[in-house]
Image 1 (cartoon, helix red, strand yellow):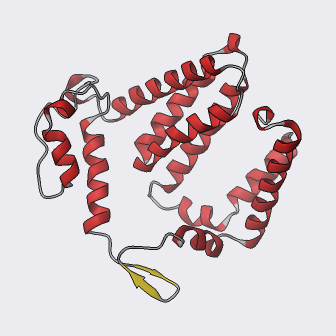
Image 2 (cartoon, one colour):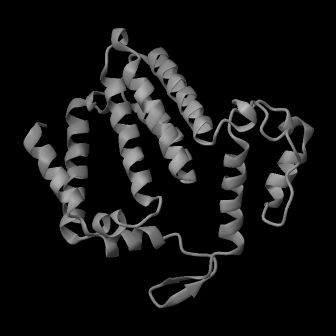
Length: 231
């Protein structure tokens, strides 16, 4: 779209109140936002390249995905989203897309293992086989899975500490997090509508209006030129 729309979008982002509020905090929010954006930006360029130019952008996609996974456990959700986007865009080259996604995932796992210090001196394929999982901060499903001989010796090139951290986050959500508050009500279970309402309450009206307008234009363009030609 050119430099001017890009600069306008950048200006709106850096002056957006939520970005300003979280940008100065030492949390995972801004890091996850950065690497999620980088992952999808690199994926968009990888899908737009010709097969003869296969390589660099898929590698960049994998590096960004690995950094996102190092930043926040919920970044695992990027993997199915990437597969869904690849299915919707560039349908004429399914083999190239499968190869590219495989390369990106492999690179991401290497980055993830490097980030966790290459446990046991290298990338292990059996993170659950080193020692049994136990302790008061482990969830029962994780302990059961680790105790199963089949699961313990199933190749899984993911650091053990990553798996334990992911399980600890699940345990924390179930046992530590306090009750939630929404519109005068308190609940220990939460509400399915919480994120939608929080988005509408915490996001500025101009940004909501521009986001809805942009989404509408995207749908209109998809109908006009076809979803597989948007990239």
